[in-house]
Image (tube, rainbow, N blue to C red; front, side, top):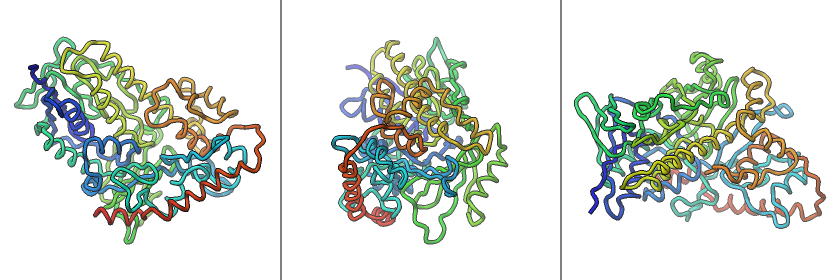
Length: 501
């Protein structure tokens, strides 16, 4: 009988504990293939400010056997049906520009798709695109949750993600992992011993730990992966120049109802997130540190939030935007922030951890790892990051804001992504569809998501086609579905009260 290999994850937080839970379930549910340990420092805090998720993280939590209500209670969680973008373009008729990016689009077109119908009937003159093709845009106006009274765990009337306290979530995952058989070691790793392209051991002040496989979950420092190769980072700074953030935690005002969506409001040199947990709001300003000092950024954020805000905690962060050229070197794999980081505009942090861990499950084995396996893993992970980079750049490059140099430069960033300039030119003449993006590495943002950003930012194609009276039918059907959804869903507050949130 083959002996279980030792797999050691250095670093806790979301990256360490999500990876531990997943690999333990994948490799050890039938027979033990890996003895998995997590070494977590009691002295080094986790970043813990990325508190929103994409909707597909539900599938990860469900597959790991986590109780949804307990996860939300323990993490002070709320539900997220999408992101409301504000001020990303010049005001429209004196009103601040807004659009909503939900996780769903209703498939109501029969002879022609609903997106084309919306454009050809010039409905953009009377409503936002998201209001014309989705239910979620209407649910949030009434602060409705995506949940009906009889919705099963991880299911709703529309797809949804979460707002979670990242620190509390990591603690909950740690408990779950330990209960499932993962070995927990509390220690601070300060030194790595490389040998022949591999890591032979990691050391604290008084202890040495060996393993067959090491996973680097040490955050931006990349302590393990850096020990194997120094020149192993590709920066996305030319495409995404926001490299700093100031994060605040503030109290909800008396009688405040947490919103079931994230808000992303553009300011002078970046944008502000606002994420409502059940217990407080997490907010922060993601900005270009070459244009603002931390003090200027914090002042601008506080002015935006208003003087009535009762701030609980403030933290300044330096963000390393980009990813590894090689995520898997020898016997070491970088996951989470040690592998890369895309600014948190579309809440992709936990999603990338999920992708890295799941991909590792199909590439790692209990025998000798062939180099083509590492190469395939590295190629795919690089593809994931490039794909997400392009989607984030899309939010910036369509702007018509010219009030600061930051925004004037943002409009030029499409050229930093291979093929995006050509795609944008194409999408001036036809709708964005699946085949325009096929062959890439899309994992959660597809043509539907692209259309919400393109048409939310008023990048409409000039379509030429005559439609009859039936062209309005999809929108009548949508209004029926909207009313049904409003009637059957609970308010966000009712749902949170029902789970004890």
